Length: 453
Image (tube, rainbow, N blue to C red; front, top):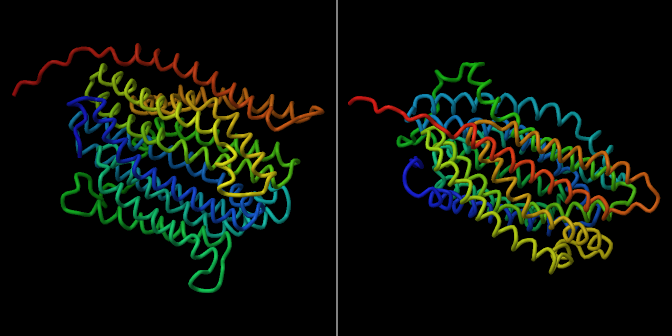
C-alpha cells in the first residue's frame, strides 16, 4: 500500500502510470497480435470480431460503474487513514460485481445472435461475430470480479505484482490465440472462436492469480465473509460515483453501434476498415489511459486527506504527460495511417477506409487525452456527473447530425469522422470549464484542527 498524500505528486502519478503503462504495453501487443492473426482469416472475420468487440464497451460501462466507485472509496478512506472502511468497500464491491457480471452474462448470451444479425453488413460477418461471442461472453463475465480486485489495488496504489499478473495473462492470450485459431498443435483450427477461447483462459488465470494475491498474509485488504452481506447504503455510495463514469463507456458503446449502423450500406470492407482503425486507435490510446488511471487514485487519496493543491498538481502532471503522448500519436497517424492498417489486412479497400478514419480522427487525440485525465480527476473527487454530462453532449452533437447526413445524396464516411472530431473538441472545452468550477467549489478546504495526542 502506498501513501500518496506525501512526497511529489507528479512522482506518484509517474510511478503508477509506469506500472499501468507496462501492462497496457502488453495489452497493446495483444490487441495488435490478435488483430493481425484475425486479419489472416479475411475481412468478414475482421468485421465480425470487431463487431462483437463493441460489446466490450458495454462491459467497460458496467465494470467502470463498479470499479471507479470502489477505487474512489478505497483511496479516500485510506487518505483519511480509515483502513476498516477501505476493506469494507472492497468486499462490497466484489459482491456487487459478481452479481452484475452474472446477470450480464446470462442476458447477453441469450441476445448474442440477434445483436450480430442486426448490425452486421452481411450473413457471413454475422456468423463470424456469433462464433466469437459464444466463448467471449464467458470471458467478459470473469472481467467483473477481476476489475473489482484491480480497482481496490489502484486505490491502494499497489500496482507492482498486479502488473506482473496482468502481463502473465496477456502472454497466455498472445500465445494461445493463434495456436487455437490456426490449430498449430491440434491440427483442428478453430478460427475466430480460438481467439475468444484464448481470452477466456487468460482472464480465468488472472482472476485466480489476483485471488491468491489478496489471500496472502501481508495483504492490507482481505476477503471477509462477514462483510459479504449486501449493504445497500454502501452500494449506493459506490454507484453514485461509479454509474456516471460507467455511463461514459455506455455512451461510447452507443457511439460505436451507431457508426456500424451508419456505415453498414458501405459493406464489409468499410466495417472491417473502421474495426481495424478503431482497434489501432484503442491500442494507441493505452498510454494515455494509463496516465488517466494513475491520476485518479492520487487525486482520491489527496482529496480524502483534504489537500486541495495536491489534487490540482495531480491534474497538471497527468495533463502534461497525456498531451505529450497524444501529440506524438497524432503525428504518427498523419504520417503512416495506411501502414498501420495494412499490418492487419492488405485488402486495398479495407486499407483505404481504415487509413482515412485514422487520418481524420487523429485530430482529436489531444482533446481526447485531456478528457480522459480530467474524467479521472472527477472520479478521484467523487463527482463523476460532469464527465457523464459532457459525454452525453458529445454523443448528441454526433448522433443526430450523422444520421441526417447519411440520408443526403453524396454522403461519404469522411463526413462522419469529421463530425466526430468537432464533437470531441466541444466536449473538451466544456469538460475543462466544469473541472475548473469543481476545483473552485470543492478544493477550498477549511483548516483541520490537530487532534490532541
